[in-house]
Image (cartoon, rainbow, N blue to C red; front, side):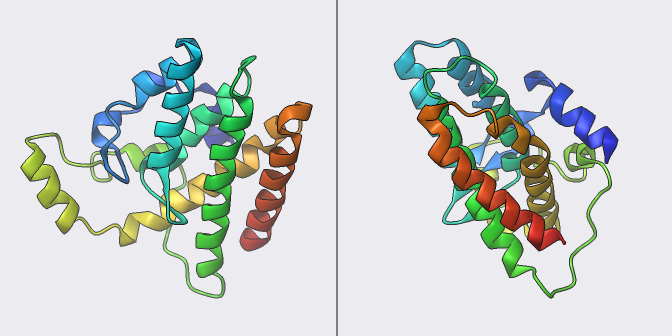
Length: 194
């Protein structure tokens, strides 16, 4: 797990094959631009980027392939002196709540095998097929079996939340109430693992 922790804090935005990772509405090809806008764009572009990311990685209390990798960069955004720290923290809260909800569904059940290294989730066998056409992507979406990989995405999303929780303990007064709620969800996630 130490190699995972190192990866969480060292992976670069361009190290993720976003064009082969999906979110709830399609390929995450736009995510590098969203994260760059979230850092360097004007205030409205920052807000739009953060909302686009959040709305695509959590949906109806569910997470998806892009969630753990996106979460790494949302946590990193908290390290910047950012006008939208509260909004970022709200997106993290939505992911934490969905993660806890999904993990509770696995309580007292046999859990699928999880790769020992998060980078295995980016192996050729785990990635979305290369882009051919919008029509092919629609067929892929209908045929893809999320079941076997879903628990791995969930597991690593939870692990990232647990490993990065310390970043929330440094919350400013403006987002302290939401950060506290995220930490409560993370405590519940830890209980699901225990």
